Length: 63
Image (cartoon, rainbow, N blue to C red; front, top):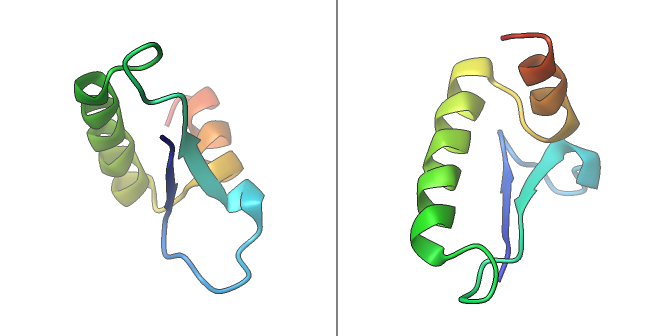
C-alpha cells in the first residue's frame, strides 16, 4: 500500500509536488509506523505549506 499526500492538491498537479509513503505492509513499513510517519508529514506540510520536493528542500534547509 502507498499513501500519496499533497498540500493543496489540484487537478494536474505534477508528481513532484506530492509526497509518497510507500511499501506499507507487514513485510515492509508496518501500518502503525506508517500512520505515525504520515501524521508527522501532515504536521510539517501544514506548518510549511509545502509537499513533495518543496517539502524535502525545506526540510534539508532546516525549516
